[in-house]
Image 1 (cartoon, helix red, strand yellow):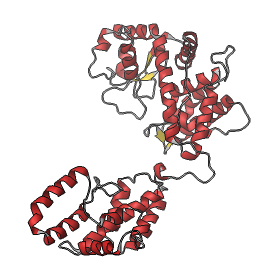
Image 2 (cartoon, helix red, strand yellow):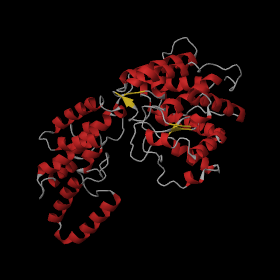
Image 3 (cartoon, one colour):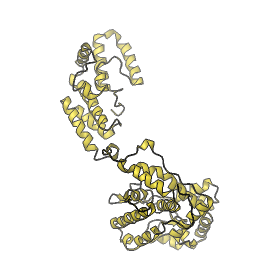
Image 4 (cartoon, one colour):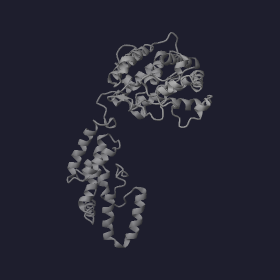
Length: 418
């Protein structure tokens, strides 16, 4: 069934009805029919089957009422074909199945139904009444529209942007601008201290490394947060950064310390010292990686927004990246709390990444950066409130909110306003 298209090019039930009836009437042509059926299977066509058109065209035209464009003898022949060796009800079931899928397709504006819809359509096909299939098919539309964003139509008059027509704003920085952003992030994460470049926070199951405190999981840890240190190392290796030999040879590329206690035992070792020196010397590459990650995520963030809010999310991003403070805020927040696209980065079903902040922006008369800062505070406060670990509310939240205060326009201009 999953191989059958909505347009009914391959539907084995109809093919059997037509071919068996043909074999009974023309026994001498069995071999040629077998050859034709093989060719039909290859091309996805059912030749000479008058029943096919019933399911191919709009269900309401060809199931609920006769087709005035089809000759009466063709309709009669169709019924005759369905009275062959195969039970008539089985052929009707195929027609009802195709009708139900057609109805669902109409309801979702021509988009192909997913497996859930197809499976339900098949169950409807087994029902006794064609009209029941049509009615319940429409009920499927309304039911599934509440379960999937893909099937959720944009309300009348709501602002919407087609996913296919989307484009994302671009982030382009000079070397001096990139250096400034890197310094800001280094101060935010490490207070610009070298020792903090390889660190393991209390209460966390992983070490944080580099100016962006990139996450690196030990082999036994499956964390909910997006791991970023391996991607950073791949980025730097492609740019011929002189990786520490032991780091380049690490296989599998997991953090070599199983827990915080094991890390603290070797925190002053030669390997850790070498890693800190490497990360201090490559701050520019790390800043480039952070900017690239943020820039490449913007289109995906826009695409992930609900239909009715997609245009507003895009407009907020365009306004943010048109100013120096806004560019920095977007770049830092993606590195700080992620894009908001990972299903694992949620508490109680609510995320805290860039997408969630953009959706929380009020759209009032305040400057866009002020709205972003306020929305980010709201989202992070909600995260801390939803967290199981008290440390997020008791200790981390204050630091997060303090970091957001750096989301202001700098004294010098990084990006020329548009």
